[in-house]
Length: 190
Image (tube, rainbow, N blue to C red; front, side, top):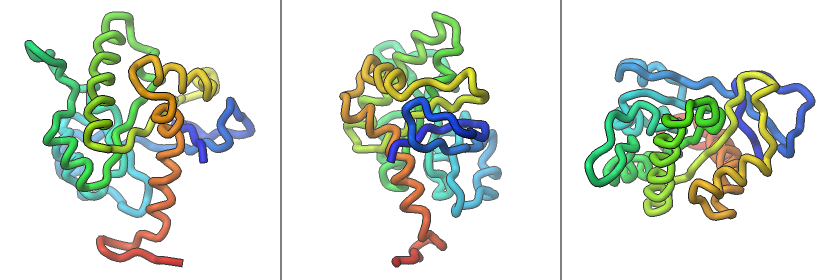
């Protein structure tokens, strides 16, 4: 089922989405914060320590790994992901998130750098078969975007039409998989 991720409570709006999910983004600054997260809830995290976040089993989505990347390398972009981190994300079933609203609110130079880094992350996620989750992450009603506009934007930065549509249903899959979760190795089956 299609769903958009927002940072405020939606009441009665549709914008092409049948469902809106209100999420809280955990800003992780140090490794000790990872232990305090509740595994039963949907956990979306962003921070400078991408490797520690991906190694944690308490995280469901790593949001904008490219956000805190430093200077680019000589032959490729420093996108916050590499083949090692992708293998860790695949092993721990952690999806990579794209915050579209944040991209659109950047100035032109920063936006072009960020989009280039996201394009590299999309290629890495495709290669290692990692789920990609995208959302508007709107903080108010004015920042909401139409479903077709979001899909068109994702297609323009390198996703196939199927991948772009699946970005908005992947979060529903993650929530469905967490419903019966009790602890590591224990799951309720109806």
